[in-house]
Length: 348
Ligand code: BGC
Image (cartoon, rainbow, N blue to C red; front, side):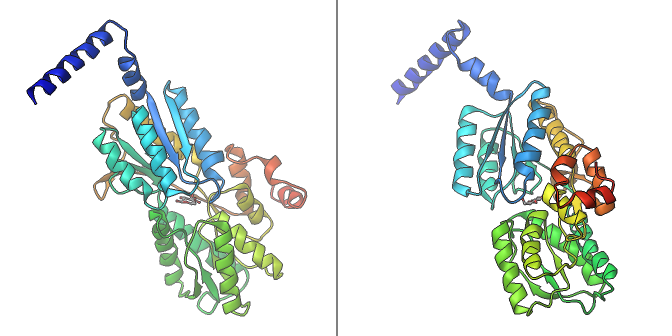
């Protein structure tokens, strides 16, 4: 026993001496790790935001401050999420920014804590994270509920008697309940009820299948759809299109497809959550942590410092606002079939 510990002490001493002599890569590796921001995104197809919005925005903000980034995507695979995190932590991270995927980030947050690496829950809440940066998700949901009501009003329909299909996001994403609660607060107050409640998913094709079942069960009598994001909305609109129906549909993300549907009158509105603002806020927090400072900008929410940003409701006449902010390109939105609507709404 004694012998082994002596050997270890000698071994450690030898390593330290080598390090002091500049012959070991250990100190450099440690220094590098402290400069590294490790990021895990959940998937590439529940919306375009993660890969085309958040990834470049986070990368830009962190590298501009002189840090290196390791940004990876779990491709909707919880096992892959864990493998990526293990490899990142083994290489070393000065901070982790995690977008949860079906609870996989909870284990990662615990491992990071053990390794002394601070964790920022990015956009989606994570049990055990040190910070949470997101939008005010209840407000996002309330805006979605309001979009449904506004659409019904414009169609001259009474929310109390309208046949509304209620959809929601993946129930394993803590945001999904906040979105739904926010929407229900507005819909309940107007006396609206669900004619059919879908199970809830972030997967577009699954949302399409769920809506098809709702449509069949309601014998095609659908007056409006509460869709949790633009990706779900697009799948739902494809089925409405097939049945020659145009009814109020909500959404969020101000994605190109969502903005096109809004301009075409197939989606009442989209909730715009500028990813540049979210990524910049999270990066600022991450940089503070990388510098070893204790950030103070986040307010506590259930014990976790929470930075809640403000979402913006976008109707057809507001699309140009997203373009002007640089978060969508008119050349992507205004394709041949959308061109007339772009012109009518001043999108350029
Ligand atoms: C995000 C949404 C996104 C959805 C699907 C949610 O947690 O807040 O912006 O559309 O996940 O990826």
